[in-house]
Amino acid sequence: MRYFLFPLILFFLSMNAFAIGVDKDRLNDPLLEARAQQMMKQLRCLVCQNQSIVDSDAGLAEDLRAIVREQVMAGKSDPEIIAFMTSRYGDWVLLMPPFKMTTLFLWLGPFILLLVGGFLVFRYVSMHKSTPEPRPLNADEEKRLNQILKGSHK
Image (cartoon, rainbow, N blue to C red; front, side):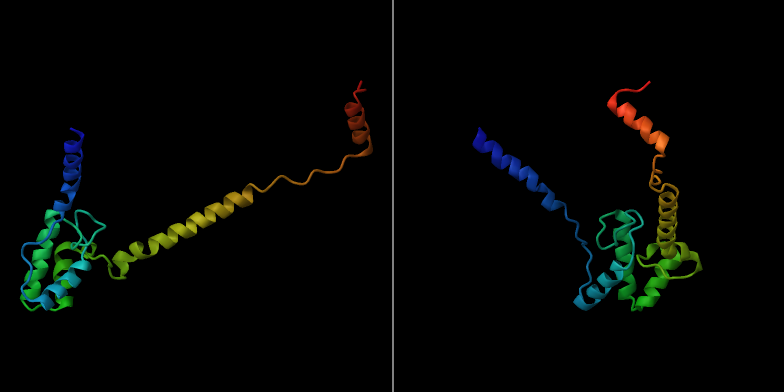
């Protein structure tokens, strides 16, 4: 029984290997397909949001890959394809959006947050400085302390 169970477990664990998605409709010309792949690496999957449409297996990403291939087959240039995609989906479809007023916060936001965080840490540290150095005891306080330590306090 044990000899049958182990291969069965290995078989089911290896089923993930069949889950790799490959486009059925690749371009016949390898140069055009390579160009289309380069274009697809610049476009964001609108479902996954942090993947290019090459890496995503979402249905929308598959549709976007088909659109890019159609544009490449139609003889459109790379800037024309990017302009077409941004006119339909906005700058959000680009993994590297252009630096302009509408995307200013995308580019400068992390630096602003870093500066604000650094300022807050500096302010917190400066407000909570270490305890000040204790002042030395005067003669009466020192005499009283010695009495307490000797156990002869009044």
